Image (cartoon, rainbow, N blue to C red; front, side, top):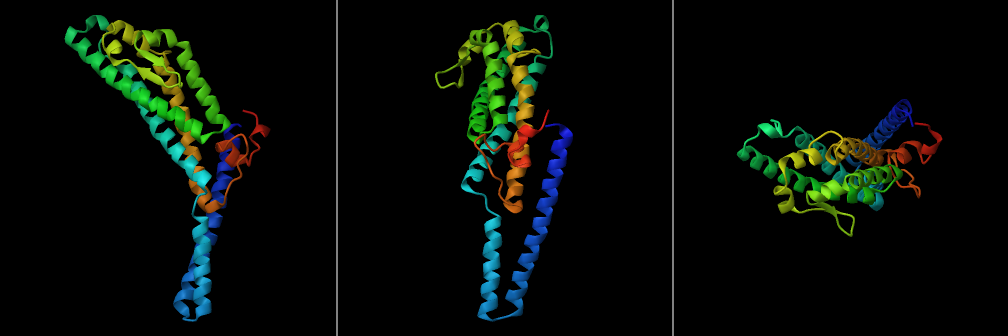
Length: 247
């Protein structure tokens, strides 16, 4: 789907949400007026029925709530991965040849702490995308795994490996004892694993934010129908017809 098509659909969804919101507010106002203006049991019962009807519209289904929780995790972890990747790429301020022994020690400690936190967030992000489902997330997961496979040998030399469950692990001692130039070469340059996942995390973040916006609006604009491909943003905006659009 091109950006113009997506923007148009988002605007349509926004207008629909606003219209239904006005309708909901009108119904709430009617309920309040009936409650205030009459003491009869019939009027109070009608007002109570309207309140219950509106309350039901403001709640997410169990499946939607589960997706919302998954995308909330994805959003937070993708944000952090993007920031950590930027820091790792900017360190150290000096060239390796110009660094003192003390500066090298500090650099290795900072990198070890940053990579350790990044790996935890990477694993949580991957799980969050798996839990959320959808074709878009499947693509991002595949790309992330591809970045690791491309750099697997070099990463293993610094203690970063993949366990039998597909999660990344870190041998902190191995990383902390590695040569500074090697660390910078593998983790701190353009085109490295860190650079790749940092850039892709930005796309993952955008997708999570958009899906969260759709899920939040669906509380007021009605329920979307999800199909076997998942419930990513394209399903929500195009009612399952995302394959009718060309990118």
